[in-house]
Image (spheres, each protein chain N blue to C red):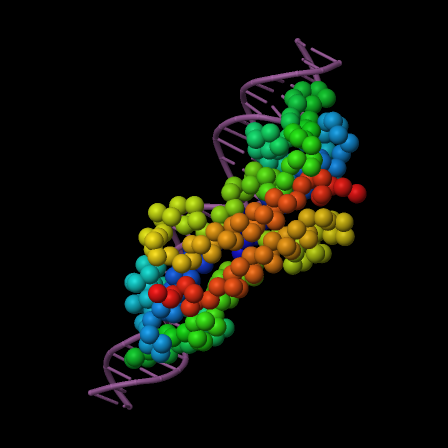
Length: 134
Length: 134
DNA sequence: TCTAAAAAGACAATTTTTATCTTTTTATTG
DNA sequence: CAATAAAAAGATAAAAATTGTCTTTTTAGA
């Protein structure tokens, strides 16, 4: 359980690669995909999601491509993962208590909340700089 | 991401219910399923998995049913979850580094390892007694 | 021997994941 | 302005996992 999907894995690979490039170097999606060994069309979708929330900036047309949206030490692994996988929710009832009819007296609830916090803390403590640095 | 499946949810509900019963009270699967609102056939599969690893003991035939395999304070939530969902593996490469061709120089690897440890620690610190007690 | 109950196995519907392909938009350049 | 380059968007489809159900078998008790 708790497994990152391929999408998440690809997302990390792709953006870490981008973070490792010389700053302001515009990278073609096709080049990134080839370098990190991910289906280009799939990576395109992922980078579109990144782009929407500003994790990367994109340029169309000749000479276009992608660059990081912020300095690599200002982007956390948590942001990257949540961008493509959605929020980290170990249990439905963590986000919608109403779904849990056991609600009021459910003792499991706070446990999942703790799990969620722990995971987020770890991922939030890691930046793309940490992952791409020499 | 990191979402518990329904199977995991059902598993927890079922075994917590069992843990809340008077000790040595043999419970029918059909009764448990009704009480925690889970499809009986599905819960049956789950309890079979519990039974195989000794989390519950089963008795067949008339007067048969299920009881906890150990005292409720000796069964952790981690065991329950892993029984039905498999090991907690945030990323494939955590378990099979060979799959990660980036292997040696993969900086993400230890991060997932930390996530895994944190999650396990939380779940290991909670027993069925904690979850079923008044 | 009949009945009660779990175990085991085969099967099926649904949902999610993992893509691919085509068309559209935007930008550059000759 | 026309041609080209590249990302954005949308539709579709294959594969895998999830979420079940149904039938048969085994085991135990009355």
